[in-house]
Image: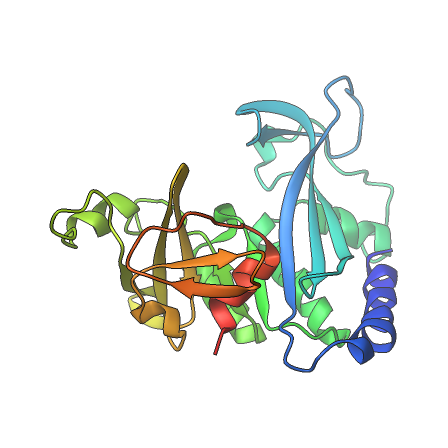
Length: 268
């Protein structure tokens, strides 16, 4: 089923969508997961205890990992995978021993027991092999780790994601402490050079853009180092004008969407 949907969407994109759009349009792959709750089940194969980030609690069920394609106007669900958990202690039931591991069902059961970051790489490789054109990968901060960033870069995609706060990565508070605030201003407006390091070696360089808005929490975007926005004081996406506006003041409006993220990364 996963291969069928990937090839089907590849055909739709190449024959129905790309001929109608400009060659300069930037396409993206969007990765996200949601909880498939089975709280009343007891004997479901590979049933696991998973954490629901939306409600902040554990529940019995699975994680539905979905990969979609978008050009800013159209969204297509390219691939998916139903995940159990890689932690054997959190699995309520194991996979059936009656299924041959060489079959499609056996391989799918094995895939469901891998880490989500490993499954993401597999889905991206399958998408790349199917000929689906995209320049960027967008996902949540739970997938944003130096190892994942370097692996996705090796596949051939740039990454736009929020930085994951861990003991191995510098958090927002530390970045604020190392940069001075504008004199007489109550808010920071700055951009910071950052990098992804794995095994003591720097593999990627990126720019971290701090975007502030009235009534909206601070948002961090990982951008390519060549992006001209890294040298600007602040930026705002105006939905009615369809363009980016730069100023020294905080933005009055922020539109968080796929199109916004792509514009932040690719505006010439």
